[in-house]
Length: 126
Image 1 (cartoon, rainbow, N blue to C red):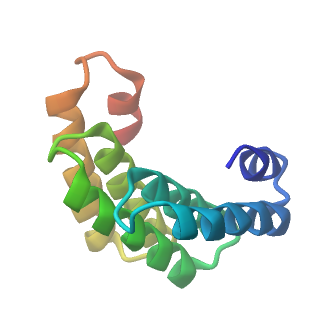
Image 2: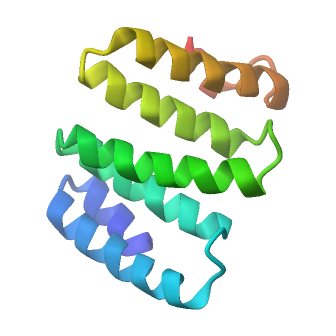
């Protein structure tokens, strides 16, 4: 994921996807199907698709991340909040504001329970 992350930061999204997907293929062959690392990679791919304005693909990958996280992480894990917020962002870009609010609020509830009251992520969600 490191090379994919650098290409994402450079806004070279096709290159980022290329490397994330290479990493994903290795993970799918070597890790259990519900491993948290898979969720992280799916989330990274989803974020790149969001940046590319390919919102249906972004939702597909973020939902894969969420499915794994809901099964393997504690219910108030900060990674869940991040995924809910990423899905909210996609719905915001799709102008589906009620759905965006639904996901942002789910993320906020987790953040309120799992993060210190002055954490910057809380400010970003508000």
